[in-house]
Amino acid sequence: MKVSKPKPFYELMQIGIKPEYFRHKAIDEKGRYLHWDEIKRRHPKDAEDVWLAIKMSRAMQRSSLKIGNIEFSYSVPNSLQAVLHFIDKMTAGTVGTSNFEGLAQADQSRFLLRSLVAEEAITSAQLEGAATTRKVAKEMLASERKPRTKDEMMILNNFHLMKEAISLKDEPLSIEVILELHRIATYQAIENNAVSGQFRQDNETYITDYNGETVHQPPLYQNLPALMQEFCDFANTNHNGEQAIFIHPVIKAIMLHFLIGYIHPFGDGNGRTARALFYWFMLKSGYWLFEYISISRLLKQAPVKYARSYLYIETDEMDVTYFLYYQTEIIKRAINDLEKYINDKQNKFIAFSSAIANYIVNPKHKLNDRQIRILQQAVKENGAIFTAKEISNKFDIAENTARADLNGLYKLKLLGQIRNGKAISYIAPNDLLVRLRG
Image (cartoon, rainbow, N blue to C red):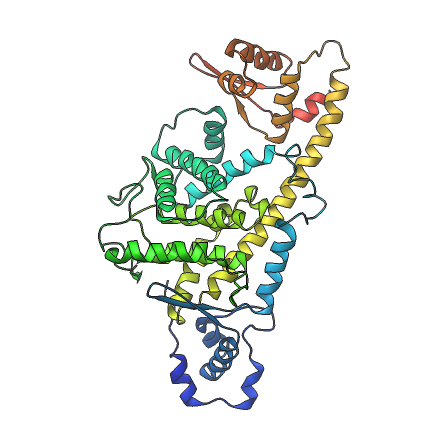
């Protein structure tokens, strides 16, 4: 992946700008924050004139920051402000769409927390290369069985990592916290001769593109302790405008994500740690809905755009705005996906309530409360696997009782059965609602 680098701004300024080019602003007519690579393709005859006008417009909106010896800038054009407003409206405070209203209440829809934390854990690991399927991973997390492979260990680690990030939302950031998050993320699942919970101890880490070409060399490992302390200081500083500096919390969370990727303080596990810190800061800043939002699945779908946003930054004088646009669009899509997810779950719950009420009217269909709750989960998750141990843990009952509950549902043809030697598990059929309706 090659990205061309424009002339420095000061060189372009020496050329001067013609008045007719002032119509070109920081963003184009579609609200896009285009890089030089795009500008020279769209304006082959006068690319430098157009680029200079764009850069001048961006310079008037630009804010600069410095972490250690890393100097970078960003701006918040109108189209980015619009996405930030959408995120604020949908995920912070008590405001939300009709589908989200009440989600913050402990007694309503808390089942989403475990399922969506699990989703983030699985896709975050898959983003790092784990090959375990979503179905197998969910079965492992639900049954609490021990991971059998390194890929499964990575998923289990990410599950614990997400829960730890949530539990730390009221705590300040420190180097010790970052190292602990990394240790959790990489326990028995680390490569490149790196050590869990320890900054890298050499300068042999390079960021390469898909062709193996080096596109970024992180800061020297000797500078990491001081640099990461400044990173923590930046995270802990209140940028609410009281001291003349305001950084929108979503922008700051994304910057923390970006900086871990740029600094690359670890030999392995930087992505997992960066995403955990992103979630930590979003929750710390009052965006409570992020307990339920998974971004890694969408990041996994667009790895080229993710990598390209970093290249755009490095080739355009460390302008982080490219990454801000990329990440906020990912967040917006994740929010929309969650809204659809909740709507689907609500519709299934309504359908299940009606179907189960009619089903148990028949005296032959005697079900206890646990069995009804098992079926409720089965309707929500077609293909879900149930084991006696899982049900025993969930309802705090003996395994024999759990086994009897599951086998009873199997005899009523409401669950399927899977035999693997002496081990027996049960699976939710795709047509469970149809079976309940008779």
